[in-house]
Image (cartoon, rainbow, N blue to C red; front, side, top):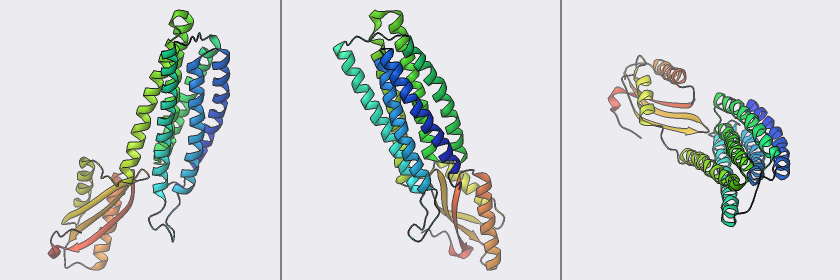
Length: 295
């Protein structure tokens, strides 16, 4: 597993970008009289905080096994991605509440050109940052970095909604509530992404098995290894975005221990070749006479 240096690098880049966007959005929202733009600035504040959380997760989640953690620290990354999802959902609630209040009170907000320019800059910058971050996250197989990339994408989406709302309100002042409606729409998008990330983190924490087609693919790979008569008792789960597998294989009861060990290595090699996200593999070798007893 990658030690997380690339993930930390892309997250530091995100932190500097988010810090700059916070200042830009607050100024653009204040000078441009846009409630949506100011709400978007708060979203960037949550981005900055989750960047810090991701850095902590990468720092400790990529450590290998030690005397106190025999299975490593990958769960820390899973928890980190869950925290990022919760932060996204919290930001959605805040933005949604402010939008509903503004709509109910019919508060007049007539955005001007600075708000539009601020939204446009944010869209371009955050979309580029999303693509950079998600590419790194997938390459190093980090759910926390991928979740953080979606935080950047949600910021870009929120700026798109703000751009639409501010432009409409500027073109026709009577449509000033478009700004608040845009912010409300943004909150729904952000909440959806946040809940999806939380759900995925929960599934990993609960050791949810991979989809049936993945399980069948694992079995096919194992049974295709020469010397393996059958396989059973497969247990698989994702931890920190990496697949862990435990399986029993049946071999000729008359073969040597050395030959059985060789077959085990071939099974491990097959799985690592077939699955890019394959991590720890535990293979139990049983003689054919043992039947198909499972753990």
